[in-house]
Amino acid sequence: MDFPVVGADSQTNSVTTAGTKTLGKDDFMKLFLTSLQYQDPSSPMDTNEMMSQMAQLSLMEQVANMTTAVDKLAETTQNSTFQQAASFLGKEIKGVALSGDIISGEVEGIQQTMNGVMLKLKGKESLVPLTYVTEIKQKS
Image (cartoon, rainbow, N blue to C red; front, side, top):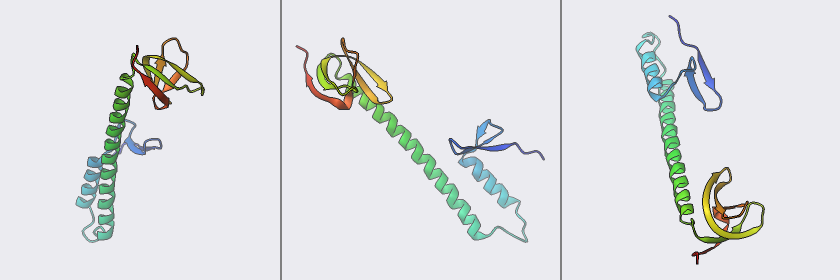
């Protein structure tokens, strides 16, 4: 019987078969049940080992659920921050640019950068991080 080549991806901590599919909790459960089905009846799996494997499976599922929840929270937070920045469009602001200079002007755009959400002011080269806004005025 031939088995696919199995490798570990150190960046994602996932196991892949021949580089095509990531093994998930269902795959591990199938492997676990198959090992129970084909175990030697004269030398059954140790109960402590079986409980340890079940605990590891449960832990893996909890980590996967937490990862999904954190991803959703990060997406929601980013959307919320972007919506907050959108409320500044057309308004006069004063803030501290990344260069450290205090600048002011009308917000004409929003940019997502590695440093977070930035406000682009009309006629200015510098961007103001949303968190560095010190004053907001309604455009007169």
